[in-house]
Length: 93
Image (tube, rainbow, N blue to C red):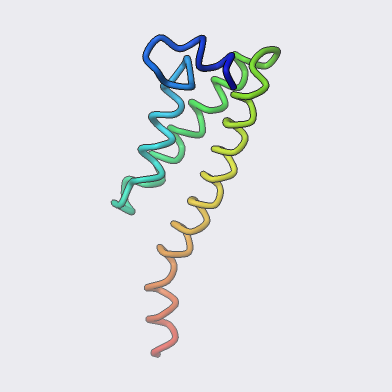
C-alpha cells in the first residue's frame, strides 16, 4: 500500500481520488431519491479508474473491487427499502 500513498500529493492513499469521493458520497447518502444516482456515478468512476490502472497498482485494484461490492450491497438494500412500504401496504389489504 505504500506505493499508493507515495503517489499521492494530498495525503490520500488514492492518487486519483474522484472515484473514492463519489463512492463515499454514495455510502453516506441518506436521501433515497438521490441514492440511485450516487451509486451509478460512483460505479462509473470506479470502473473508469479500474480501466486506467489495469496494469498497475494491485493495491488500488483491491480497493476498487471492494468498493464495487459495497455499492452492489448498498443498491440491494436501497431497492429493498424502496419496496418495503409497498409490501407492507399489500400485506395489510
